[in-house]
Every structure is written in structure tokens, then in C-alpha cells.
Image 1 (cartoon, rainbow, N blue to C red):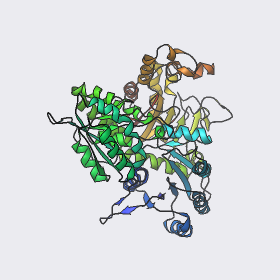
Image 2 (tube, one colour):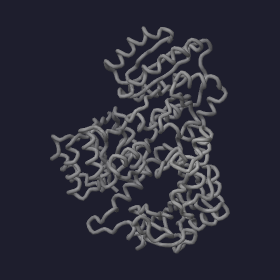
Image 3 (tube, rainbow, N blue to C red):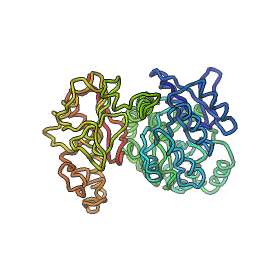
Image 4 (tube, one colour):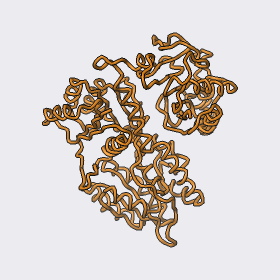
Length: 530
């Protein structure tokens, strides 16, 4: 497999040959994945500063590299569609990767919608970005989150006695607008707990004006200091601070943002108080989420004995959901599926190849109307919404030989079985997997549903869409009026993992859900056949 990563942002190669870049999306969405993929045997090439002026050189570069797949990142203008045409002419599959929502903007939005239409596969960095893509274009996308980047720090909360609490904020220039709105709350808190605030971001007029104005406006804050951003400066500052704050704003742009700043701070070993952005909610048990940062800090300071255990749990969750090798594996799975989505130079489609005994066989169990390319789609019903499965059979008793498949995926299926039969069903799926094969289960998360019910017991108990994150989790959507669509048991990540282990699976882990409503309502739990 050969992959080219394309980006307009400048790519920097240090004297020691290390490739880096100042743009966060370049590092998280290109550099880290391609470095990890090399360790998995993928030949990966990173090309930066692709612009309209060098389209001829771009074509020559593609002829030289000859990738199977090209990933197009952000910061591309209208000429990106010309680049796609160049790639298509050479039979190169195109993956469009989105981490920012510009789909509603007049000019760039049109370009991005055109790119989505032309791409062979679309990737979203967050569930909210996937929802924005679906709302704007109707296109489905694959969820691949950001990996972590920085070093792991020792979990610590030990402010110096009598000294102000040292707070850190770090981020790109597009996030500077989130700082000023949280300062009144910090100034109020500083009356009881003296605070300093260290800012790490790009140098420029915006940060200079912010600091100059806020020092006079909020003298109660013990100090506001600034340091130009670099990866090394960020890691040093995380190690030196007492806590990290991540304020934000409730708008269309911010709400699709990934949790990279949150996961870097937690991985660095420091407590985090953050605005409850949608992508942060998967971490709500390991940090302090509050729209009012000052209030969140006060809550954190009121329970000092819980701070280090929360950081430790958070570091484990970061490794589980955003580990570099795990994220690289997601990219690789997408590339393998995309390279065979349609016949290329006479090659078979994945479903046909699987039936013929090809090397990689993936099952989509209980597929319903979700017919996935690259999978053998299996369902009991012969047709749903005009979509027919590849194999019609009861997934409780598969008409497949032992050790047949490399992967078995069941999306919102296990909750439709009685608890007393689910272990035997999982044993059946275990049977058809090859040794080393992977099982992927997604279903609603009972913990999330219970939390939503407790927030608003009366409003959350209705049968309509108000129950989508509550009663539907327990019983299914009553609008189906179909017994097959009813839910017969609900699971937590731990209880689902327990039945998977009972059925013989090992290496059980939770990963971000990629289908339906995704996190936090839904969950994904995976395991392996040893």
C-alpha cells in the first residue's frame, strides 16, 4: 500500500530529517498518521504547499510516487478539484479529510462540497463534523479522530503553598477569541484563589491587544503572560503548570472541533477544566467540563483528592481512544477498503473478492439497509429500503465455515437479542473468525442514557425524538412498529466487554463509535479471537 498525503500547509523537515509543521491539523491529520503507518509497512509520502501554480509538477510527483490512495487535507482552494482530476486520471483513489466545518461558507463551502462529491471516501475528525457533512451533502463519512502528539507526563496536582495557582491556556490563533469571555469568571475566582494565566499561541496583534487590555481590566489576576507557540514550549508549559483551561464558544465552527488540546493536557499529566464541547463529553468523567471556566475550576479545587485519580483514568482513556498506533490502524483499514471499493484495472470489488476467498474478509452482520463497500453484508431480511444484503441468513447461526473472516462488525445489533442468548451468538461470531480476527460491536451506551434520564426525567421519557438518547436506548424507536427493531437488553462498556470475554474474545477495548449518533450516546467495543 502506497499513500500520498496532500496539504497546502508548509511542511518542515528538520536537520535530523524529522518532518513537522506548525499547523495542528497538518500534524494530527498527516504527519503522525503517516509516520505510524510506515511502521505498519505502508509506504507513505507527505507533500505540502500544493497550489495551483505547480499542478504540472504535482502530476509529475504523482507519476513518481505512484500512490494507491491520496489523502487531501484542509486549506485547499478551488484548484483542489483540478488536483482530484489529475489523481483520477492516474487511477489513484481519493480520500477527503475534514476537521473544520466550512461547508456553509459561500466560496470554500462550494469547493468542499465538490470535493466530497468527487472523493472515493470521506473522513471526519469528529462525530459533529460527520453530522455536518451528512447535513450539507447527504454523504456518509468515516470517523477517524486525532491521535495524541505529546509526551506522557506524571499525573500531578501540587500547587506551591502560598503561591498563585498557575493556569495554562494554549491554542492556535483561531481560538484566541475564547480567552477574553472567561476572564471575568477567573477574576472573580481569584479573590479566593490567586491565579496566574500563561498563554501559548502564535505571536501577533491579536494576542498583544488581548493581554494589554485585560491586564488593566482585571488587575485581580496575579499575572497574564505570553509565550510564542512551539511544540517544545507547549510540553514545557504543561509540565510547569498546575492546571490547563480550555474555554470555548457555542457556535457552528467550534462545536465540530476535536479534543486534541484536551487529550494533550491530560496526557501531559495535568487536570483540565474545559468548555463542554461535544467532542469533550467522552472525557467528562476525567476532567471538569463547565461553560463557566471559573465555576469549573472552583469545582476542581473543592475535590483535591479526586484530581490525580481523574488524570490517571484520563491518560488510560486517551491511550485507548487516541493512541497513535490505533489511529494509524483506522487509516489503514480505510485505505484498504477504498483501494478496492470499485473495480480498478480489472480488480474485483471487496464483496466479490471475499466470497472468492481473498486475503481480507470483513463481515457486516445484521446490516439492514446499511450496505457497506468492502464488506460481506449479511442480514435475515432479504431487503430493506431497496438494499439487498450479500448473504441472507440469521446472524445467530451463520451459513459460513469456521475461521472464515478476518473481521466481523455488528452495528446496533447485539441490543436486539435477549440477554440469555447473546453469549451463544457471540460464540457463533467467534467461530467464523480466523485466529487473530477482530470483532467490532457498536450499540447504545446504557451509562449515557441513564445520565440523560437523570438530567430531565420527565422530558426524556417520551416515545418521540425526545427519547432518542434515553428511551430508545432501552427499547428502540417505537415508530418502527417492528418487533425485530425492539431492544431486548442494554449494555455499559464494561458489561458488554464481560459478555465478549465470556464468549471467548480477548484484548477487549473501547473505541470511539463511528455510526449513528456516535459518542456519547453510542459506544464501540472491540475484541480479538486468539
